[in-house]
Length: 239
Image (tube, rainbow, N blue to C red; front, top):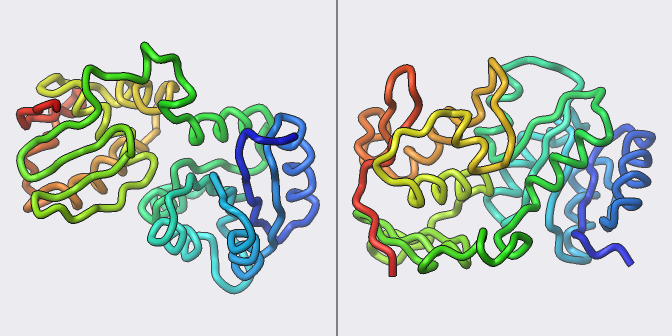
């Protein structure tokens, strides 16, 4: 029985869908196929989904539109596929809520590693790795629950975080007032190293700032340390 997670593959190229389905099914995942937004919604209406693999270029609603809809309505991982290598596509995918961007053609093992990284949750790690001294943290104006992966404002209003945003914020609150390089942050969030042109962390930081900061253009919580990385400056209280 495939119980590692339910993954719809949304791509208008049926042969790609079939190849991904065969490979990931062999790795223990339950894989559904859809070729457009309507098909994806139909799959999601039938059973819970853990991760969506989404082609950028689709007939009708494109991948960016569907990624934004998914992020606004579901807590799922999103991997965006594209046959183009344009940096603007990469950035837009992340800004719309995707967790990873994979360029076609890709090696199956690369896709599998990406799937595992996005689906990685504290419950899949060892107790020593996953359990902080306490599971809730508070910093000025905000409360973060690491167990439920939820962020609340001072007024108790829940704020949606993508998988990448949560992982990055968790890395910051676990390492306050420390300068962390992009490579360190990627390693803390996803256990991988940054490439020479990898802007994933920069994009995720920008999205976090827009949700946490009073003025994202003049951040006081997540500050840039030029030439070194970022530092999370608030006092963090665990409870």
